[in-house]
Amino acid sequence: MTTDFDQAMDAYFGPDGEESPVDWADVDAAPPEKEPAPRTWAAQDLRSVLDGSYRPPQPSVGRRDDGVGLFYPGRMNSVASESEAGKTWFALIACLQEINDGHHVLYLDFEDDAGGVVGRLLCLGARPDDVLERFHYIRPENQPSDIDLLDLAMVLEHNPTLAIVDGVTEGMSLFGLELKDNTDIAKFGRLLLRPLQNAGAAVVTLDHVVKSSENRGRYSIGGVHKLNGLNGVMYMLENIRPFGIGVTGKSRIRIAKDRPGQIRKNGLAHSSGMHWYADLVVKSESQEYAEAHLYAPRERDEADREADEEQRRLNALKRKVLDALTGAREALTGKGIEDRVSGRAADVRQAVAALVDEGRIATERGARGAILHSLPTASTDADNSPEPEAA
Image (cartoon, rainbow, N blue to C red):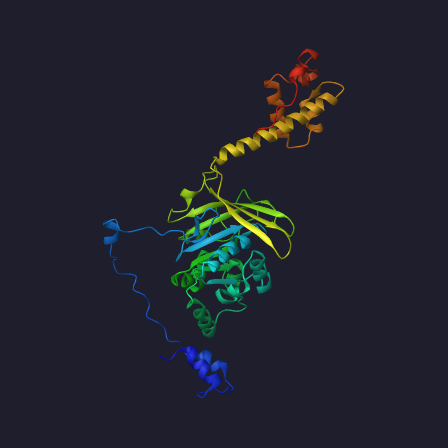
């Protein structure tokens, strides 16, 4: 069977292998031979499901430090966050793991360039020979022609286990598609993402979230179909400490969606409904070297940890309130305390109320019904020391 690619090569090199001029418009105009579409409307054989031999898909691509997997092969997965929260670091850790395991990786980049991406990969400890052999970097700058699709097909012949698509927003724009249109989102999936998925790779899109955390929920920026169309896992990254050269950055990785249900069971529940799955930590020693980890969540329930953090914050405000009353020449109203203690007014009022309930602040009625706050008398001052911080 003569392919479009064969025609192009014969036209360019000639039948005897010598280079000759070619009119690429003629090559592009030649209709590619298409394989017959798979038959998907017939009733499926359900015997494996009924006899118990069916096994759900497992997250076998990439892994946390404890060996638990990250992404489902042959499925659509996603990682979303605000800018500079570590999406690319997260993706490249998985890339390096697959390369070191002897697998091929495709990196389809609509945002950065080869220097930035490969530079980070080398910074994580990738061997140049392995990158050259098994890391396939593509930087599209136009809608794909038939020849472009043949180039991509040649990469897929290496059977990559992981296909990163970095920059969904920019990629859709390149295809002339609208980010907020669910129909266009589905079309982008059919045109680009599904062929990668059908090749057996774990497809991982790197995407942005809306800036407002209150309106974000579990969604990346754009139409709701981005989430609904995923049949693998979607992670949301919450930045805790910024990443950069010479610093240690950290982001929390939460599970926004787990269609096969094999990943969430390895995380810890959270009040938001998104399980805590890992902590991404990148310690940058220099521009040339960084140590990266995907730590499993601590076995301790995160709700307990957050309660401790809340208690530490409240104790710090209590100390500030007591210091303000100690330095005041007279009893203070609630407004007077708020003027002297930095922090949200509601949080300061909470600290004052707690100190009153504990008997560490005395109150009395002042002019016009105002509530005046002061330290207890000298006989009870010994009880007025700040509480120790929660562990």
